[in-house]
Image (cartoon, rainbow, N blue to C red; front, side):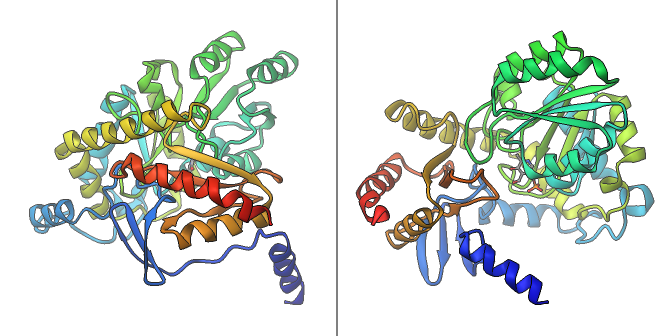
Length: 386
Ligand code: PLP
């Protein structure tokens, strides 16, 4: 036991210790922590749907007598956990993303880990952006395929590795997020498509932070730039913009069929409850115009921020890089005292020496609230350096 205590002390010394916060309430763009109401700038509820009581009441009223209004599936999909809505949800996603087939996973983590570890085995290789999410990295580690991590969004570096390594393997895949979760920058999907064709690879894009935020069909950044058809595997999580739970992998019928047969994180896990699937479908099918409206509000907000602060970010996620972990914590605390709920992000979540505040914008936030935050940050830099 002492060993673990020492390890925890080390984490505390490195400012990398994590603890679960007591959150009292989330109300749209606000959060209440320790009796203090703050603007929530740390949420992935990008469209501000998750606490919308009108939508929740309408949903309950309409679906409370539905056969699938159940809080447990009590089983995995391949046993007795399946019902009509799950298949309909997958069809909805095929339409949205113009893909042949789709498969629901319980979380984005299980989805990425399952897809990456299952599809590639001995003799194959994976080329993965260095800043890809932990779930992709976990998939790389579980997979028996060789993997190479290229420098973040550096396609010269990727091509150099592809040139050297690609021919030594059978199947190969390039994997990138579209909007990066901790940096808010966007991968050059057009360039990735060019490279995947040139070096005969598949291309997988994780649209976790772009689904609901970009694209005419809300189908992420590949949709925004009309490249959905060129991407072989797309993953999206439903717990962020869509204020629900679960994740979807979209691909060809063959790949989805293979995942159904081989992906452990799909096969051996009780599927999320039917009521949750009804809720996701209610939002997508019956509230699509509302989602689009919220998406447009969010786009206007971050476009305005980008126009005034051009180098700050390319999306709704704004990293304020402080570098030093202790100062980052100090600044976060200071901003919380001023009514802005921003959280420090420290290693190992981000590379060492890049500690930051991760500000995420949501649809109902006003521009002047962000201007006030930036003023506080400017004024507090000196404070943080003491
Ligand atoms: N992919 C990315 C890029 C993420 O940021 C996350 C979650 O933070 C996930 C996948 C995992 O999604 P979920 O929270 O549904 O497990």
